Length: 275
Image (cartoon, rainbow, N blue to C red; front, top):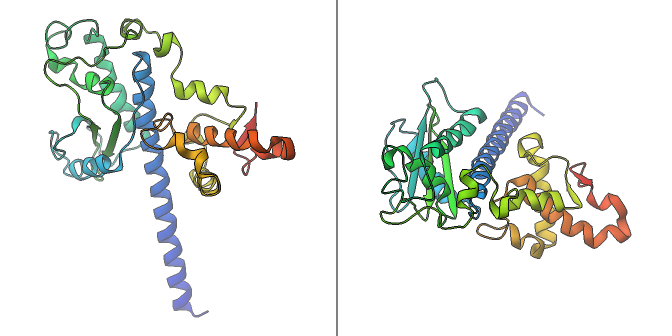
């Protein structure tokens, strides 16, 4: 191999490695936003949201403008957040955006009219949290500016319609008092994970190798497509994070093969554990 050929090969490898890392980081951020929203929504008995790539693309285009203002997503609801720190975002910023919006909970009383006396000091003091928990919203797409810490989340269908309320569930008051949704229990994604006999060794997708997770998804969903029906966008567990979704389909596979393969049917390259 000539020096030029070797250099070109090494260059292609570096580019592919960089793209793989960027893809893994993007997936981690998407999982974090979805998980943060769903954990909060579960407090109020509201169903989960799933990831919307189109909404995320619109959010990316708008966030890259690095201007703290709404726009760029006609037909969507929208939350924005910005930090004064320099450079692009990290995972702490992703978590911080959701935490900041959810912190408006202290000014929102879900048992009252949000357009009347339900928001302490007026609707502008709780409009972010009400969009987070809006029960008719089923999909979100978020992004951070590439050269700034501006985060944009778009919501589909949009919330905060005048005259409508974010939550009609009977769990509303339990959420305000710190209880969980679904009768005061934890969220359905967590419940599913905990009840799976075969599951990933951690529920936190940020602690699992993204490439290994992707390979496991590809193998199961390619060979057993029906196993993956319930983890598609908009489906029962479509809004769960990647570790939870993978555990769901790993467990289905394990139940089918454990009689022949034993615990090895839950290994998946070291990702799985039998509980």
